Figure: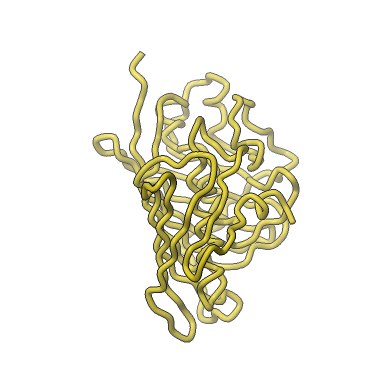
Length: 263
């Protein structure tokens, strides 16, 4: 079992009550990464629902989480032949911190037509790309990243104004990606607004939705994360994730607030 699987595991306390442990190594500053927290919810959902693969999962971050136990209460909302629905309420210290709604399915049984208006981007390979500078970010102990574009801002180079980061990500211990891991990787890249204003300030997540399309093949994930609009300090982040075999395995959209430090 890889480190991610161990550190997102949940214990069943009762019929609909599961307990996880938010571990060191996954924090951005003092707060556990939102995608990591979402993956813990995904484990609790998988334990209850008859379908075992996330199809779409949405989290609202009501308050920051912290290291230590987190209680997950799962409520089944409905279930059909191919899709089941549930919500998870995640508590710490008796306070509701995160609320998650989800639809699960069996990805291997999906069938139908395929179409895309966007081509998969062509990136240099993992070994040809350099990691961003180590700024002491704890989360990088767990999710290893290589940037193809946008990374110059971390070397105090003028931002390129693109509103996008492109590159690769994988588990730092070499574990292969899976569908629960996609929930975490959807929040692994830095905020694209950094390519506009530089890596300054705080960009807290309000809501994160991840759509899973397929089981990922072994190897690093190819990522494009981009923002197009910031309005009164609120910004969207749209993510696209391809596996090493070139298939689109996930999409994400995140709503965040941008808090730029005033020096």
